[in-house]
Image (cartoon, rainbow, N blue to C red; front, side, top):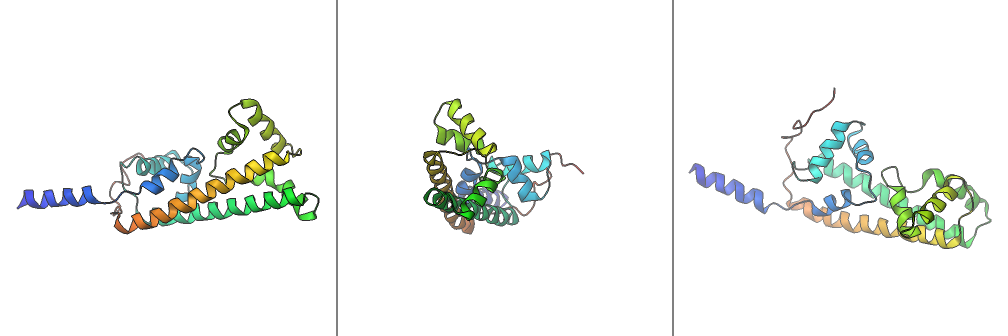
Length: 194
């Protein structure tokens, strides 16, 4: 009887769906995991980073609250990026309007999202040469005028990542229906600070 119930539990555990789509989003090269962990757990520490890393590597299962909050964070990120892409496209069409100038003044400080790796995005836009990346970064930081081709590329890359987020979140919703969320066991499996 004991073996039967243990085997049944192992079979159930094995057949549980994984949160592959959510994990692939977390592992995306544009995401800064430590910043995302800070948003997720409302605390900046190595422990929160390690807690999220343990979920990403599937050493521990996500809690339902973590999944829900990650869904909210990624949805907000997606909406922010879509808005920025639209504003960039509008800026290219109408560069001399009051709104365009105000947006361009604030944009370098607020580009992307706090959990996004700006360098990776700019490297993808600027090609493989570091020179292009540094030129774009300096132009953004110093608020010098970027060429339209860079702004178009930036809008496309931001929009592309927003679409990836949206697609992965839809898949994650389906996966969540069959996923066996953690009941809280394993949350203290690494050193937590007080």
